[in-house]
Each structure stands twice: as C-alpha cells, then as structure tokens.
Image (cartoon, rainbow over all chains, first blue to last red; front, top):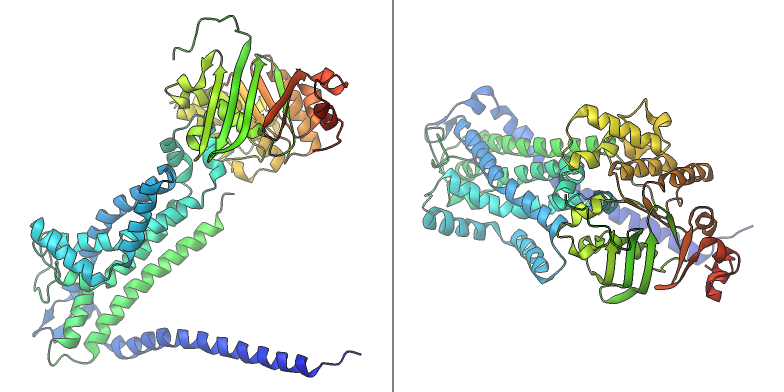
Length: 289
Length: 261
C-alpha cells in the first residue's frame, strides 16, 4: 500500500495552483481580443449597410459612407505590394540561396532585423523626406505606398526566407549534382515548393499594411477627399486615417460611425489572416515529401 | 561542347587524383589521396564513417563550389582534364551522375524526376522525353513497377523505389561517370541485389565509383578497391587480393575481416 506523504500532498496542491494561474493568464490574453470584437460588432454593426460601404461621406463626414477610404486603402495596399514583393522575394532568394556566410551577409541580416524594429512614425518621417520631398512625388498614393513597402519589407523577406528554408537541402544538392545552376534549382524545385508559404507571408503583410496609420499620414493620406483617386500621384483617403479623424477631429459624428469604420477595417484584416491560415492548412494537406 | 580531348596516353583512366586534400572551415577532412580510377569499370571505396569517402566524391564533381567552407587542394583530373580548369562546372556535373545514401526523389512526378536533366539541357519535345524516361527507368529496373503511374509523386515512392528512381535520374544525364555514395543504406536486400545487377551491366558504358559501407558489396562488384581511414587513403588494391589477405596494410585486412569499423 502506497501512502502519500505530506510532501506529495503539497506538491500536488502547488501543481493545481500553477495550472490555474497559467490558465487564468491565458484567458486574460483572449479577453481583450474578444472584447474588441464584441464591442465593435455590437456598436458598429448597426452602421454597416450597402450605403455605408458604397457611398461618399457627406456633411463634414458626419454622415454618408466610407467608399473613398475603402478604395484608398485598396490602392495603398496594392501599390505597396507591387513595390515590396519583388524586392523582398529577390532579397530573400539571394540571402537564402546564394549569399555566402560572410560579414556582408551578416550585416544585411542585421539591417533587416533593424528595419523591422524601426517605429512606424520614423518610417513616416523618412517617407516624407525621401519620397514626398526629395523624389518630388508629393503627398500621393505613390509616396505613401513606398513608405508602407519599406516598412513591411522585413516581413516579406523573413516570411519568404522561412518558407524557402522548408525545402530540404537534399533536394537542392540532388539538383546541383545533375548540373543544374542555382537559378535552375530555384525555378524547378525550390520555388514550386515554397510559393504557397511565400503567399502566406504576403497576405500577412497585406493585413499589416491595411491597418497602418502613421506612415501614410504625412505621405499621401488625406483627411477628406470627395473623389476617388484616379492614379498613383493622387492623394487618397484611407480607412485607418479616416477612423482616427472621425474619432478625434470631427465634432458631432454619430456614435456608431467610428465603430462601423473600425469593424470594416478589422474585418478586412481578419479576412486576410483567415485566408492565410486556410492557405497553410491547404499546404499541409498536400505535402510532397 | 568540345570535350573530345585528344586521347592521352592515359585514355583508360577516368579519374586521376594526385595529392588530393580537403578541408572544411580549415579543418582537414581528407589528405594525401593519390589514385587512378580505370575507365569502364567499378571502383570500390570502403572505410568506416568519417573516413572522407563522401568528401572524395564531392571533390570529383566540384561540389566544393556549392559547399560553404569546403576547400580542395591537389588535382583531380576527369578524363584527362583538371576539374578546376572547367570554367563551367555545371557542364562537368552533367557528365557525372550521383546517387546519395538516402534516396532523394524530387517533389515532382516520377516522369518529371527522370525528364528533369534533359529539360535542364533544353529538350522540350515530349516524344524525345518519353523515350529517355522509359529507357532510364527500364535500365534502373523500375519501369515495370511505375509505368502505370508516372504522374504520381516521385518523393512518395518507397525507399528502394526512390533509390532506383535516383539511379534512373542519374542515368538520364547520360553520364560518363557514375558516383554512388552508399546507395544501399535505405534499400532492402532484394532491391540492393537488383541494383547491383544493373551496375554490373552499366560498367561497360560508364565508369562507376562505388562508395560503400558494405565491404562484401565492394567484393561483389569492384575490380579495384580503395580503403579510406580517418581522412587518409590507406591503399588501393585489386579487390580479390584485398579480401584474400593480400592487402598491403594490416589495417585494411583487419577492416575487411570485420575486426573494426
């Protein structure tokens, strides 16, 4: 017959306590997410209608819809993607497939990590100095998108490099041994098996770009535009800035409107993230080795 | 390609190695290797783990260019020409087929695995590719098992099948030299015997370097065998002599008799 000692009993009690503590902390973590979504749905839900999504703001932005902001955000994201994806993927390919392990490579890696750590307001000022003033793009979608592109470049590079690294070295060696160049190996073996992972990274970048406010404030986003942007040199409204403005700068905005804008914005981001998760699940489902 | 070099006095020597040394990040892995691999024959390389056998193969097809920190000194001549004088190492590697210890079926269809090398060289014609794929799969003794599912993934075949696929892929390069690195590690004995039969047939057309962890395999196939030990070449001897106690070095006799390794 085994008898639990005093020590055993105490250990068991402590074990239970810690389990509860960690569980509680985890719940605390979910709480804000649930609260944000809950509040937005309850208070912003009533604002959502076809009219809200597809008409222009009127009466000093206290009524009407958000169409110019919605369209503007799409412009900003698409142009930022066009700028950042080719550069980011190329850089990741170089770092992962070509770069020798030397001081220069390590310096580049360090630069990427640092770029990821730069506060967005600093990016905003850089974008203002570089794109708006120096390159004379003016405050425009182009300037704002390039600023966003630089800010999200590290995300694209890191995500791409990680998905390139999931392709085993043995596949590359087999190819090289057949006389394939590095580029042929990338095209035939590495990219076809990492492209879904790269897409996942790109989608995550999209969701991040859509929500940024600071980098576009000085570089291309306008507080109010009665028209939709016609090209990349136009200014534009954007969801994130619009939310900021009607929440803090405009008097007499009906209460449900900022919540409605926030709900649309977060839905966009969550939909993107959902897409990225779906991609990953799909990817896992058809693993080729 | 102007590889039709004038036949030298040594035209029956496929690989001529003089004073080869290999370092990884400055650390010596193999040194003092001088040997000649005769053409159209099977040349065995035996030795315990970490004796430098794989490094030797990597030096022959210039994989030092693709391996960080790998340095090669001394000379390796393939068909009379120093491998480092090839300005285009990819052309050199196309002439050398390699089979790895663990089978590497590339994550593409069986058909594409075998057609890849021809595609890399610019063959587009489907009919030509069909011929190459069937011929190589037949010669690797795999055709009958996969002919009805050439469109399934090569990387999902069984280990033994994948290894034959790897051999078919190497043959599709139409190589003049075939390097086999412990090909039977992940292969069942029956398949191993089948591959060994294939190799015996192939040697009339190409030079085969057979690195093996099974000394009996070297005995069955190789006419000459080199014994590597802790980064050194101990000796190169006629295989039968080596196994009948006539090795030049007592360590070789001890190894082939299974006293260590």
